[in-house]
Amino acid sequence: MAQARSKRGFAAMDRNKQREIASKGGQSVPSEKRSFSKDPGLAAEAGRKGGQSVAPQARSFSQNRALAAKAGRKGGEARGARTDRPQRAAG
Image 1 (cartoon, rainbow, N blue to C red):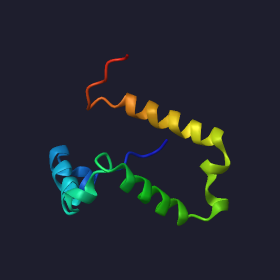
Image 2 (image 1 turned 90 degrees about the vertical axis):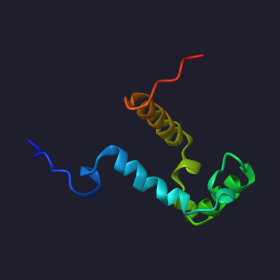
Image 3 (image 1 turned 30 degrees about the vertical axis):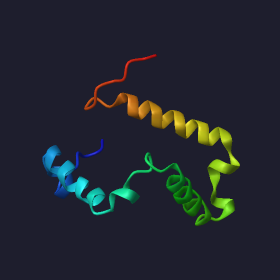
Image 4 (image 1 turned 30 degrees about the horizontal axis):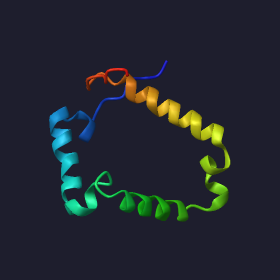
């Protein structure tokens, strides 16, 4: 039987304190570079740059569409399972 691990450091902090600290990282970036939703070109450029930094043989999602689809489903299911956010209405 696995032993329960005690929470230390960041994990032991109050959730609001964690959010406060985490938000400071985003605030340190200029607003024009912070939001990909405001600049799809910037998002595409960042994606290309990230993709180019990985060797072609290591790009498992580009080589295996089924693996990419499985990962996408898993992410969607995990997001839907969160209880700390209100669920979106279906439709």
